[in-house]
Image (cartoon, rainbow, N blue to C red):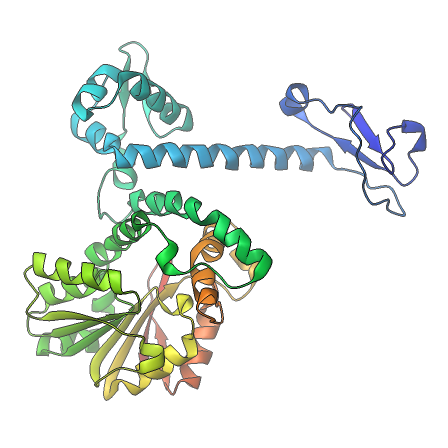
Length: 404
């Protein structure tokens, strides 16, 4: 072993009693910063054979933990930058001193200085020491400052900040079962969700998804009747109504506060005469009429009764109707989901998607539970005959065209 180690055998710290012990080593800088105190009593299971630690692997993992923990802090600082408009101000005004940023945005210079320092050390901003100015590189604008843009992360960061507020409730659900109800999430979570999904509807829905479904486009141009199930705040239907003025749209959602917000969004966009919204549990109550097109955008994996939801959608489609389903781009094999996106999806599942389903007595399908294999299987069980995944390159989502 290349570094000092503490040998723990049934709470004893005597290197002579190594038989059956596990050598524990802390590598690199962290070892110097946090040496193991030999006075600590550590009790652990005694294996039959010694466990030898690969120090390179251990050191790499410790570095990963440090990176992930630092990333959490960076995200919290990014949430502040988004909330206070700091990224957008830097994008608009270019290189700035701490005083200039503080004066323009109405914040305290000392806080501006510390926040800017954190963003520089994280690689979000650049610093020019010769001028004392901070810069948001133009390559970073889309992710941090372009509201509703295709790569904007502000809404995701806002949601992550809000999820921290339900950690205690989620921990309780781990112990006792059930889950966290939608009403327990703070309003800022729904604000972030609307901002995040706005990027889909502003940049992808009309420009990419619909052109890949010519029959859907034809129905919309002719004046089809559209239902958006799990409509949230109605951004998708507002966009469809603006783009296809002959069509009529109805949004359904089980969460009444979002329905009220959707109605306001439709009025503000000037399409309130062709878009209406209703609080309705489509899985339990079905659709009240037949539609030419039914949409779900990132909804089925959240549902308490996803199979019942698909069955209701099938029954609510006209014989030649089309169901548009957007859901998570993931695999049915855990090992194929390993990586940053898989970790992000599982985090959202535990902290929102799965737990809100379980809170209603649902199946808790989870964020990665509606993969393509399940889309096809469950659609067939619901009475659909054809499922086509659109040939789109999108790391977050798949879009399916599903027909009776």
